[in-house]
Every structure is written in structure tokens, then in C-alpha cells.
Image (cartoon, rainbow, N blue to C red; front, side, top):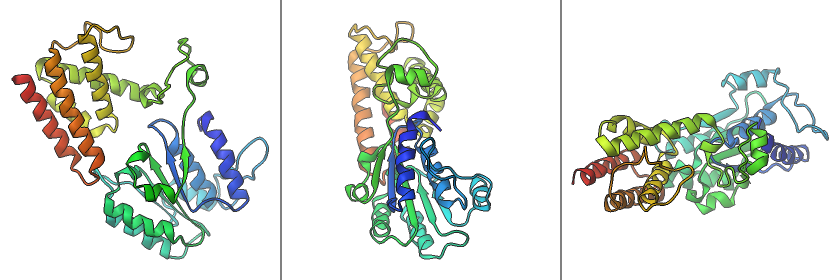
Length: 310
């Protein structure tokens, strides 16, 4: 468990101990912030038959060896379900299953739990279906929603949940926890996942290289398109790279941007046209919950090809 989650663990533990834990919680944070870890700990505690009690030194902890803990760890516990869509959005049918799940009596324990990952990808119909469950909770039922972009959720959903914002530390405190020392007191001030997680950072560097190769020679389009579709951070990365390219084109000095060896040989007008296309596509993906993200990304790639060819 990441150190910066400890305070939230204590607060949630106190609510559990005093029987004041809300029926619905929304945990919001960037990728790598630890929201999945916090949610899994909370669910395990709620389901555990013999949890370790809260004390001054540690929050409530699951025992890890009772029947419910073993079943939960093996993803076979019958009184818990996780809603994780294999599509771009979470549809209304998935949320209806949540309502039906809560209507049934718990099979093994007293509590029933549901985890909805990437809640911001719910369609409007799915979000509206969830509202009824949030408004009329059944006894000993808990819904935990995870989001990396809560501003795209319906305000009515947010208002019915207890909001937990996961904000990792920044500067020297973050560097100390990550056992790094580069002297940058502004490290990850904006809480970007590629600055928290070395694996995500490597993915960003690979994405940057593929995009620059596409701009220069058009030879890496398929690989670049795959990363655009697969990575949840790809659109933000694309905006960052384009912005750095335009800044470099205007002679700005960038400490972590595009250097002269990596810079694509494109004029300001071409870069600006690609940037505008990206803004239009990003707005459509964020504002239209039922938008076909893959189709829009493929159209954007085709638009970039046309701009480069012309």
C-alpha cells in the first residue's frame, strides 16, 4: 500500500468502526495514484470475517486467511462483483446486473460489495440506471466507483457518493517515497501518472517515439494507432507532444520536451492543423459518453495523414 493512502485508510477505518461508512464512495485519482489498492483494501475489510481492529498504529486490516478472504483473493467470492467493461464504455446492462445483485440476499457474509472501475466511461443510460441504486440502497450494500476523470461523470452521481480524491505527494516528499533524488521540488505537481510509475513513463517514451516517427516517415502508423487505442493516457500524451513541438518550433527551451535530435521537421501551420484536429476529437470523446472512441481515433489518424500529405 502506498504511503500517501494511509490517511484515507484511517478515516475509512474510523467510519467502519463507528458504522458510519457511506453506502457509495467515489475514489478519483490519476493512473498509478493507488485508487485500486485503496478500493481492494476497503472491500476486503468489509467482507473479512475476522478483521484486525483499528488501533493507533494501523488501520483495520483483513486477516487474509479466513474463507471470505481466500475467496475474494481468488476472485470467486459470491457477494462481490466487479464491473469492468471490455469495451470503450460501460453499458446499461452491466449496471442493471448491479441492481439485481443487490436485490438478492448475501450468500456467505452480511455485506455485499460492487466495484465499478473507470466509472467515467458509463453511458448516460448506465449512469441513470445507477442513480436509482444509489438513491435506494439496500442494507449492508456498498458501491465503490473508481475514476480518473470525475469531471466527466454526471453531477447527480457525484453528489450521491462520498468523494475521495487521491493526490500523491509532490516534490521532495514524493522523491523520498520513491527513493529518488533529482533535486526537483516541483516533481509531479500536476500528478501525472508517468511521473509516478516507471512502467507508464516507459510507455510514454515509446508513444512519443512512435508518434514522431509517424510525423517524419509515416512508417509506424499501425503501432501508433494501437497505442492510441490501448492507452488511457494517449490523448493527453499526444497533446503534450504536439505542444512541445510547437514550442520548440518557436525557439522555446524545454527541459523535458522535444530536443533538436527528436524534433519532427514540420512547419508551424502543419503542427497547428494537427493540434486543432486533436482538440476536436478529444472534446467529442470526453463530451459524448456513447461516442465510438476507436472510430474517432482512426478518423483522427486519417486526418493527420491527409494533413501531412498536403
